Image 1 (cartoon, helix red, strand yellow):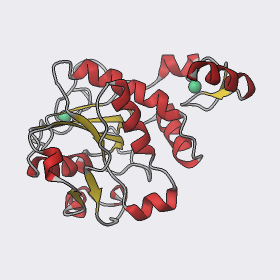
Image 2 (image 1 turned 45 degrees about the horizontal axis):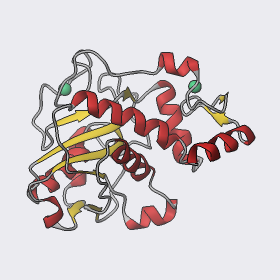
Image 3 (image 1 turned 180 degrees about the vertical axis):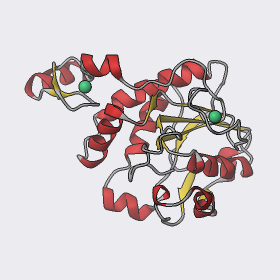
Length: 243
Ligand SMILES: [Zn+2]
Ligand SMILES: [Zn+2]
């Protein structure tokens, strides 16, 4: 039924590629050019930062999470697609993005049995201003694709912080201290959790959320994001990226 409705709608409203925004046939979500050229993270991957080992600059740093999986670098048409997704209030891209994340999680963590998926939260005020949380949309659909429960309210963001991208590296960690909290410890105790964010620049936000989950008694936390920035170029920093 859902499929029939989607097919009918796509014949009336042609689709745009979720990355470059080009108009494409109604049965597709991604154009051929993007499919072939998206900046994928492949090959040997660093478990601490999720980047290819040749791009990693983290020196195997210790995190509160046990691993991080992301299909893409935050550049080129992945960056463009996420901009459009956020600012045009177009949630349809989340289907394409969540499929990529779910596939990467399956590939990278085949042995892990997750209890549930949660998302890096926004403050209540930001959510009211924007009307929807694009990260929650992606995380919810990722959970569905992985056949896992979705618990969006396990973490809360208590107050707004300075944008991480505008801060020097040494201030980023301090900027996040005490910003996130766990709403109900019983939900988290002894659980293996998959924590989702859309873009991660330095991993600090994911690590701070993972820390709160760990302090609340989580057994293990793994992270997933659609895109990670490359530390070497420094050009990936962007006003959309949390940190
Ligand atoms: Zn495209
Ligand atoms: Zn690394």
